[in-house]
Length: 524
Ligand code: FAD
Ligand code: DLZ
Ligand code: SF4
Image (cartoon, rainbow, N blue to C red; front, top):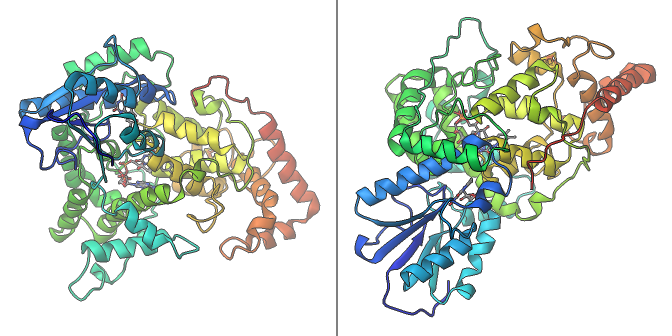
């Protein structure tokens, strides 16, 4: 914060595209008479990686709807469209122009969700001759400072420990005695059911583009035609009302089976029993505590079993908050981390989906069509492949940041760098999430119709995940052999003998040699 202003004018409140919350800290306590809100569609934000077309439409449309809602409620909103002639393309540039237009006495801004933008905001007090107040983003359940305090003296930042602290702190799923509801903290063991033929997941609500969204679709088709992804299937909630409807549908139709089938994958079934609420949560249209309380209520009303409810609350109260804390605790060096020295280029099929690996092709199809894939697809198919193949973390990070409508660096980077690629050297995950085709076969129906066989280990027709798994384990033996959760695997490897080991390694290398590196560049 800094002082020195021209005095007299209103307070300028810049709001970013993922700060679409009526109770945002910079709006709380302000009066409509002395406040000008500024929002801007910016090239810099839309192109610092070439985001999926659906992601840009989602954010622009949600911003336009939010601006309209604020105006209807009596606020003055200065909204800059991408096509405005004088648009300066950057956040700092747009705030500078808004200062010229409104001559505010002060600027009140909520810290950004990404390190890069926060660096820019930190320069405002020197740049602008106004009082600048940077407020913490208190829409999360664990302040950044609290996470830092929790993390500081620990070697391993175990999510489960963090999560238990958060349960105690919020009282969610806690008994009066201080014990967890049901006696256990975590019911994950009940949440690993493979898919069943008659699962029959209900369709999630789809939101037809209205006039505002349609205008954004046309804008994106015109200005960002070379970006990845399809717009034909755009159906995301773009207002708080729509997001509430999406949440209602989850709590009435899907939460019951959310837990058991959390890790299941079915070809062509893109949502299963997942909430599909991450885009709305990350935009600020939904409140994380409200969702957790609704989940707990579903348990109390006997509409959902404890394993589903605890599993859902763990994702939001545990993983989401932990990931955000981890990001700020480890920035900026997390961006450069590459503990396993992975250097391979991203294969082209991550963009085209053109691969015989049926699991990978289906996850990429869903990613292209929906700007979404569910957690286990991101982790155990697409992420697992990137880990085993040794793909360069920066390329993988950019890919995930581009393709998912819910991706912002604060949530994408720890998941990619630390969770899937082990690039942080194991601060987040106690072992790499490496798996052979066996895991995917157990948890999905992908392998049944794949040209590869999950039971074939090497050579022609073998599932590529099988030799790649041992190729990975062999390559990182020195680092992983003393890890108590994975080290025992090496006894199996040693028992195979040199000849069989060579078959695995040759098979993996032949497969890797056959991969085409990406030809299109959507990255930074
Ligand atoms: P559900 O399965 O219904 O889960 C409920 C909510 O829990 C989600 O909406 C999300 O807010 C939260 N959640 C669950 N797992 C995580 C997690 N690991 N990190 C943070 N929040 C979590 N999520 C994003 O929001 N943005 C991302 O950019 C993102 N990138 C990811 C990259 C990788 C490699 C992996 C493995 C996971 C990533 N996730 C990301 C987490 C998770 O995959 C998505 O939040 C989830 O798939 C969104 O779908 P859903 O709302 O149906 O989630
Ligand atoms: C992701 C994004 C995009 C594509 N476009 C805009 C935009 O035009 N204007 C805006 O204010 N925000 C946008 N965003 C969201 C920001 O990138 C986001 O606020 C930061 O990444 C911090 O999380
Ligand atoms: Fe994927 Fe291998 Fe199964 Fe094919 S056999 S779907 S490549 S896990």
